[in-house]
Each structure stands twice: as C-alpha cells, then as structure tokens.
Length: 174
Image 1 (spheres, rainbow, N blue to C red):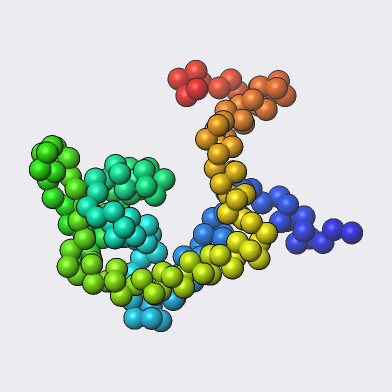
Image 2: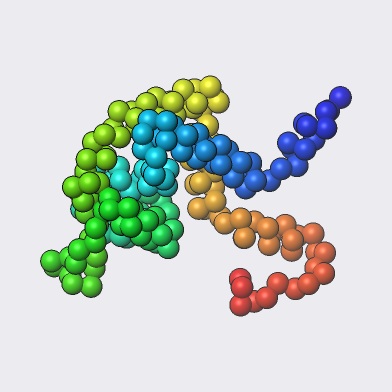
C-alpha cells in the first residue's frame, strides 16, 4: 500500500524536487561558510570564482559558458561579486567593447583561503554521488535530454497529441 508521502513524492514535478534539493544545498553551504568565518560568501559565487582562479581573467561570456548559465544570471552574480570587492571589470585591451573579469587582491586572498573548504565540498559531492548511485551521471543525462528537445517542445507534443485543445497555442510563441 502506498503511503500519502509516497503519492505526494511521485506527484512532485522535476522542477520542484530540484528546487528543494538546491535550497537544501545552498542553506547547508551558507551555514558551512558562516561557521568557517566566511560570513558574507554567497554559494552562487563558487563557480565564477573557481573559473577565475583556474583560468585567470575571463570575459563575461566565457564565464557564462564555463558555468553553463545564462548571461543575465552570470551578470547578476558578477555584479554581486564586484560589490563585495572580490572581482573587478576591466576593458579588454584588444576589444574595448568587451569587459574582462579579474580577481581583486581581496578576491585572490579569499579564493586561496577557500580552497581547503572547496576541497571538502568536492569530497562531499563525491560521497553524495556515490550514496545516490550516480546522481551526477543522471543529471548530465537529464541536461542532455533537455538540450536535445526542450520541455516546451515536449509539452506541446503531448498537448497536440491528446487533441484536447481548449486554447490554441500562439504561433508567435512557438
């Protein structure tokens, strides 16, 4: 017999489940950073900071591609990093229209101080992947499936297949 919790769990959408997991991860990350003395560190800063540490100065577009997020999302994180004094923008010497992101001395020190914490986070990620029987592989597969065919296209396919058009989709949105 299925319990109420099992039925509720099955009805949750992928998005709500992923959001819930992400909220738990961010809350734990914030608590970890605060406990270890990095009170103002935002978990969203991890990827841009590690990219800048690994590759040196990068363009905004390169960072967005490196973290696999949209330009507006990355721009927002970079503005926050700039406000905190961890990065600075400079004009590209080859192309004055392009902005390049650099770690500030304060940002460099913080990244250096965080490396052992990030190593511990990496070990935790490995443990969680192992405990969950390879969740990272499955997340990669989900990402690839959505890249091959968007959720939008999939929903319209089933919507049209059922033939139950209560409202015709707008052509301009397709």
